[in-house]
Length: 311
Ligand SMILES: Cc1cc2nc3c(=O)[nH]c(=O)nc-3n(C[C@H](O)[C@H](O)[C@H](O)COP(=O)(O)OP(=O)(O)OC[C@H]3O[C@@H](n4cnc5c(N)ncnc54)[C@H](O)[C@@H]3O)c2cc1C
Image 1 (cartoon, rainbow, N blue to C red):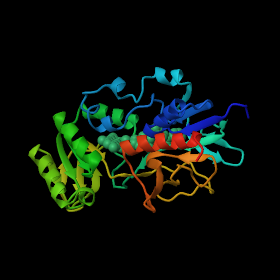
Image 2 (image 1 turned 180 degrees about the vertical axis):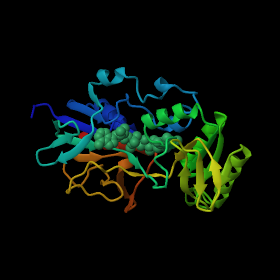
Image 3 (image 1 turned 90 degrees about the vertical axis):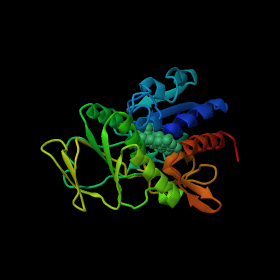
């Protein structure tokens, strides 16, 4: 182990980038290694379903930071590196390519992972989920030849994609299993408002039903609902939510709807911290888990400050 302290941040998404930047801005003198399994320079996720999808923003405009910032702040950005395991005793992490990295402090900012559905025919081409830039690129390329799309789920991502695809001139049908999408978040009145808004913009919204089967030769040609509706389509987008990504794990790490952290962002293992979508933390005595851009930023900055300033 060298004399200079090393902090490894696993996940260069919203939380990871803000944590690395905050550490440096707060005067951290040690080495900062920021890793991500994605190959792309860290980018922002919200535009992927909105103005990047519609073409109003290009790749460069959705970067989280200018690429030169990492060098300026002496942040060692390691892309295309997937962390697979933690050894808290020897303070190392293992990566998929067989390498091992030492750390003095480790921060887990691994975000969320997609909820997936298992539906007959879901191996046909033209069926997509959206979380990463690579998903968005594949989806957008496919959209060039699409007239009719089905979106499963009328939550945030489904609603945003419906709007973006309409903007691109595609006929959109949303299939939503509940009667009032997002009612649990916004209440009945606002849910009804959203349904009405979609319909006024020409989106066909089917509620109280779900997709039971996809048909097609090699690509999807039809989605069939459980209630027997047959919807011709050349593309399907599935947006049925996410769960905390806690795949990087260890028996000593307490995980319950995310890495469990205290008010300082400390996990159950000394010198391992976590921030953002992948965490659950105490709020008014109750564990809270939030999947939100603003939360990821504020949480990461706060935890970074706690890492270098003693309690
Ligand atoms: C399409 C889309 C639109 C959204 N729109 C909004 C919006 O309008 N408003 C809003 O508030 N929120 C929105 N969100 C949610 C918001 O983007 C997340 O809350 C935010 O990205 C969480 O930040 P994070 O850093 O915790 O996780 P992420 O941004 O998901 O970053 C986690 C990073 O960790 C990396 N990683 C994971 N596991 C490993 C591993 N084992 N090894 C190495 N790297 C790993 C991932 O590749 C990823 O880059 C949207 C999300 C998506 C996908």
